[in-house]
Length: 201
Ligand code: GRF
Image (cartoon, rainbow, N blue to C red; front, side, top):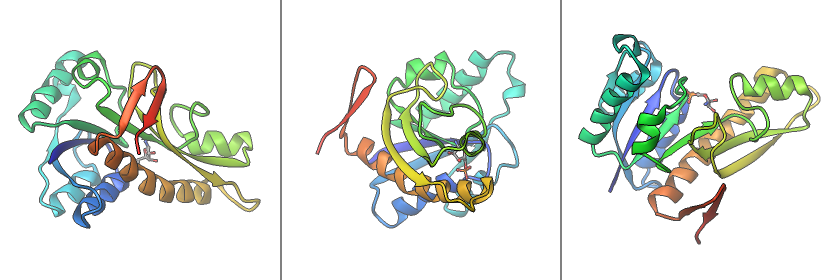
């Protein structure tokens, strides 16, 4: 069974969706560790509630990003992680992690990439006036929110939407496609060819 490590910074609703899919047997994998860069992240509490090891690693304790990521890396290796999930992790992944986990780090982004990368993607899309918003699961590479796309889901923008109601409907879809993408990875059904991801049936 594949060991998964989840990196978080906040409320952890996507982490919860992955946990739920594992507990119901839809996703055959194990979360071996949840790591947060924020000490009071609610995601850590969620992990503990499900008996998952939850660790706070304070980036401020390290002189450089490289040293911080080396610490993360040694924990990931110790926990024998075969896949790393970013789930609301608010840091840009650096070379140390990327080169050790090439094509083995996934992220969920609350917009239809390549539109609206970066922070507050739902607000960016809402303010732009798009008629269709959505979310994306992608591999993580050097480019911010720019790695090969695994799955996307559309969410229609309604006339009476606010930024909040739209974000809530996008989040519902995130909770569906992230576990689906993880399942595809765990079942070894993803092939990265250039910037494209081929899904094997
Ligand atoms: C989600 O909207 C995700 O797409 C983005 O950060 C948010 C994290 O939410 N990367 P949660 O911590 O999973 O609830």
